Length: 207
Image: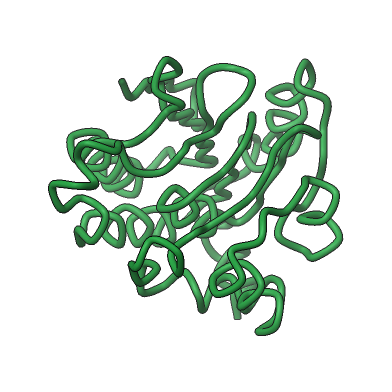
């Protein structure tokens, strides 16, 4: 349910459960975290891409059955986003569709978010009675400001791709048939670069 393709220094991870809207189980989260840790230890790593299978949903968040059993409040979510955020290379979330709930964390942990026009963005923790992942409000606030963070987290509003772009949550909107080609184009310079230089550029950019 988690695909991994390595092409030189480019690692592409795919959430591959389209029949369940790419909803995430504990095993899937553990696998993504392990892949990210492995990538961080690879001296040849230059770019890391995270995407979803299908043409409608990047991920609907937690698998409903596992969420009811406690996954909704599991520390695994923070472990995954932390592992992605710690990667010393260019990281890109290729959002092939809607991003919802706990899946926000892994996309927010990436350097860039490239979305298709039909993507929608919502994080309904207030209605469901859960706290968001600990790092998510801060990452959201850094991207879109405190008021819009509250619009999503407290107001439960669903954003269109255009609104997400205008807010700064999404960096580019690309037609579905061109999504991965555009992401590969963005990653091309990093993939041609020297890993130690890329690490320094990322550190300088993060401040």
